[in-house]
Structure formats: structure tokens, C-alpha cells
Amino acid sequence: MISEIRVNPKMSSLAAIQEAQNGSLKGFEPIGDVLDEQMLRLVKEHLTTKNLGKMIPSISEEVSDSLLTIFSDSPIVRLEWKEFQLGEPIIRLVARTSSRVFGGKIFCHSEEWLQAMAKYTKHFLIAGIFLRFFPT
Picture 1 (cartoon, rainbow, N blue to C red):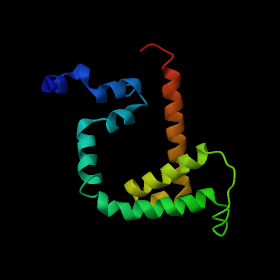
Picture 2 (cartoon, one colour):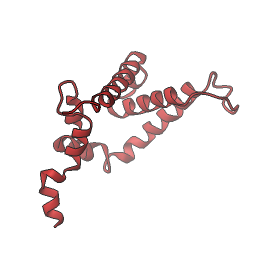
Picture 3 (cartoon, one colour):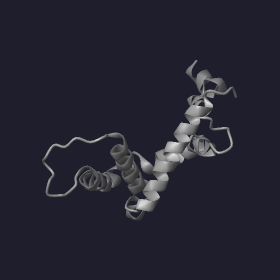
Picture 4 (cartoon, rainbow, N blue to C red):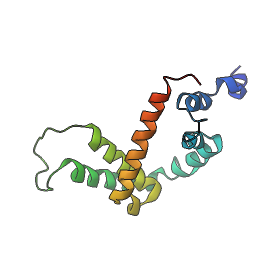
């Protein structure tokens, strides 16, 4: 029964995500590319399990540096509590960390790249939400 579910295209979680995120519409092709089974297999083989141990030090370093850069006005004032809005800083933290994993130090420290990445993601998600109001 499980093998029948696995090969049934109507039971594909990837297809359901692609449909929910408008992956078949023009302009939303990247979600289709990301959810492609071959692409997922490639990412799984190269960015997980075998290479995870090699990546942890650079990820940890980037998260530590990013936390200081994003959440602190000054490296000296690390232990003081301060109030802030969480949304934008979290987007910057995720953008820097994922850029470090996929693009290295050059991308994760490029403000131009990080801003473009954040804007693209924000606009992609807003457009996806907006399109849910219309029938496909």
C-alpha cells in the first residue's frame, strides 16, 4: 500500500506544495525548481548528512557574527536587554546564514545581495498569498 501511495501522482506532497505555492504559474517557476525531485535529491546528497559536519562550524560562526551585527548596536553592549521588532532582524539572520551555506562568505556579507534576497522572498510570498483569492 505504501508503494502505491508513493508512485501515485495525486498523493505527491511535492505536487501539493507546488500547487499551493503557485509553482506552475509564470514568475513562480523557482518554487517548481526547488521542489523538483532531482533537485531535492541533489541538495540532500550534497548539503545534508555527509557534509553537515563540515558545514556546522561555518554556520555557527555566521549565526554568532550575525547575531552581534543584527541585534547589537555595539559589540560592547552584548549583555543588555533591548526591545526590538523581531520580523526584519530574523529575515536578515536567515538570509545571511542561508547565503553562507549556499554562496559562501562573499554573498552572506554583501548588503546588496541580502537586500535583493529579502525583497524577492517578501514579494514572492505576498504575491502567492494574493493569488490565492483567484481561481486557477
